[in-house]
Structures are given as C-alpha cells and as structure tokens.
Length: 306
Image (cartoon, rainbow, N blue to C red; front, side):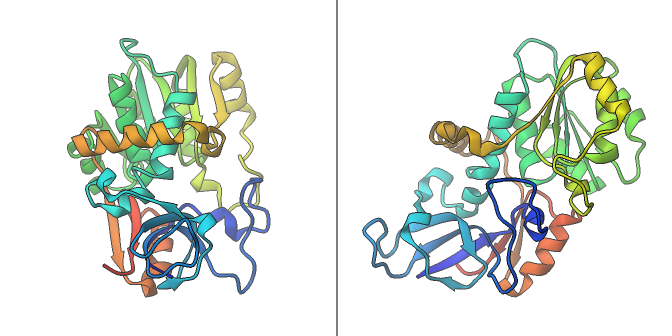
C-alpha cells in the first residue's frame, strides 16, 4: 500500500478512442485514471519493495492509497533530488529525460556554432527544462514562447532564457525577428499549429525541429502528428529542415546515465526547476484542466500527503 503524491502528465490523448501512439491505450469507462506518481510503501508482500521504501511509477492510480504490483514500481533515492520527491515526476524523471534526450538526439546543438533555439510551451514542465539544456549544451540564444507576462519573466529571470514572447498579446513573427534576426537553428516544438508554422517559416537552412508535442491539436479529430499544410511542407523541403517525431521510450537505454546527469545539474543549480503545486486529490480534475489551458508554470503537481 502506498501513500502518494502524484502529478498530472500530458495524458490528453488517452481520452481519445485512438491515442495516436502504440505504447499507450485509451482509458476505458469506469477505469481509474493513472499517471506518474511518487509515494512511500506502507506494507509489502513482494521481494522488490519493503515498508518505508520511496517508489515511483508511470502507472500510479489517482487515489489516496493504492495496491500495486511490485513490478510496476521503481525504488528511488531521495538524495538524488535533495529530498524534493516531486522532481522525480519532472526534471529528474520522464519529463527531464524527454527534454534532455530530445535536444541531444534531434537538436544537433553544437558548441561554438552561434545557434539559436526556440521553445514553444516554454514555461511548461518539458519546455522549461529543454530551453535550459539547449543553453547548457551551447546555444548562444534561447527564446521561449509562452502565454503570459508572468511566465515570460520566469523564463528570463529564473531559467536564463535570452528572451520570451507572450503569444497571447505579442506579434510572434515580429518578436522572433527582433530576438533573432539571423533566423532559428533549433526548434523544440511542444504545441504545433499556427505558432509552430510561424517558427518554421523563420528557420535557417539545415536546421532542426524537435517534434515533442502538439498540445494545440489534441482536441481536433486529426491523426498524430497532425498533418502540415503544403506551404510548411515545402518550407521544410526547400530549407532541408529535419522534423522527426521524438519518443523518449525509444531511448531508455540511456535513461540511467541521463537521470544521473539531470540530478547533478539540478543539485548544482545549473538547471532550475519550476513547479505549480496543488494540494488535495479532490482538486486533481481542476488542476489537469488548468494545465491543459496553460494555467501552470513548470510541472503541475498534485500533493496528496506529506
């Protein structure tokens, strides 16, 4: 039995009959919603977990207590995150893996190459880490696109982004040119849609799109990834821009070393972590909806207990 503190992950696709991916299935009526969670083992009948162990899982039910198989639980060391257990759901978990490996595997960031990275959904859990990784790996400018002045301030003041654009009130094409008049070399795409089309039109020859998420398209009846317009397809072809879907589960052989690096960078202060914490399981639905409409800064966390 585990007492939990759980997070709302990007699970919107599991609400569709077709999730668009082959590694996750849609929720069924009467099935308990699940996601990433961290908790403590209250009692155990399996050999892999003992009472008092701190554990995490991708398949944590949204419950105050849960009976779970030991095979789906992974023991964690709180010292890796200086006791901030929620970091295992974000910066030192699957979110951090997605950000770091996405940049490393698909971004082609090269120190000394005078590259500019743009991140959409930049104040979210993944985007906020990806931008910092891009800067640490050698991008001389990192520009974030997000949905409020508060988020823009956090990106620049707290995370070290070079600039931030509020898409709700600023003209994105104009601001992108102001932030990087020589074009864009790497784009970490979390949103898709019109914002991504605008970024792609300003990308340089032989640049790279890291296709991580398409949150603006999840409520539409389209396949995943959603189809592009003929104009954007032609831009990608003409400029030789790579745009490959990134799935972190294809790189889990690198997970252990990557998590160690993330832990070290977080503990040293090279990566700063932003979180929005809501207390109480009764508020999970509201927190999930808020996250899907941009109400969170950093990782959205639901704290169930101490």
